[in-house]
Length: 276
Image (cartoon, rainbow, N blue to C red; front, side, top):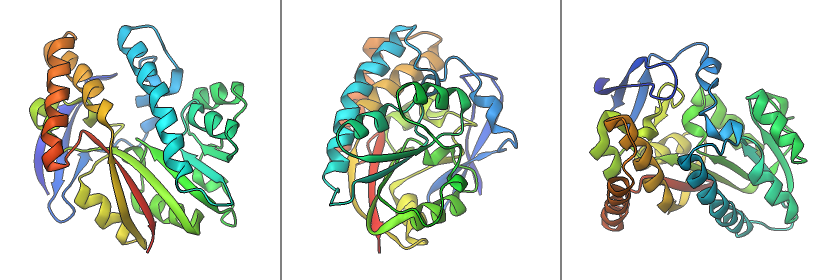
């Protein structure tokens, strides 16, 4: 595999990492992948684990998050039948599961971060530490991974476990950043959605379809995450220029979404998969 580009951990350590391009899958792989990934999440700036609302960017994140919770619920409701059992992997502080539970879903969740699990329990949602804690006999109608797949070590074995936890007609919903998007190409090594080394894998549409096909899953639909382009551009501006430029970030986010109307290469995409 050839080096696609070199970037660094802008959130915590400043360490440099390479992104290697797998030409068969059209996927980027972070190199090296640290053995102890937990230390790279030990930051108050890692918002999905802390519910932080200190900065303007934090507040924007939570405003968009509130809208996204409703659209996520609407999406999974469209795939619900009689058995409304939901598993959310990488559940963070449990907001999505709390909303789903409120609207009649029987919920379960997985979150490796202890602080996030504590905050989730305060919202009435108990989370397990890992997928291995779920009995293989448990089956779920919908399994969701909202910006989580890119974090999972042992990718192939994790996908195999997820496929095994689905009901025969179950639906797997996976949201990941798209390194083929306009904003990714514009910001290059400063693109915030590379987020090394927490993001171990960087997906294209081809790679998602190919990887899941190996586990008996077929792609049935994709959906754009429009707001991601603006939020990622805002963070990327800070990484690139040392400060947040709201006007330029908005423009790049807008351009990314306009370009994607034709290319379908949005900053982030939701993939809906079912058993083949």
